[in-house]
Image (cartoon, rainbow, N blue to C red; front, side, top):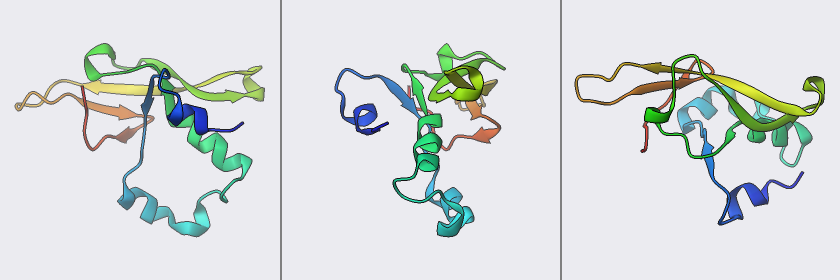
Length: 107
């Protein structure tokens, strides 16, 4: 699957879960899938969630479908669990995807 359509299609709407540079540094180049590999495509597809998801649309323990379609799931989409925590005193809602926190939430 060519992933170009996920980012170049002006009509496509995705929420993208992008790890920060410091998270990628933890893994190092040797632990990341090889460029152009099917493993890398699968990892990237897992980080694209169809639709525009803002914290106010999410519910705690909700499962969101990702763009990754798995043969082990009979061709269905892999899901990711989200955690939505009560707003902080500053009014920011904390969201975690698959147990990983977000640096910022954009509405």
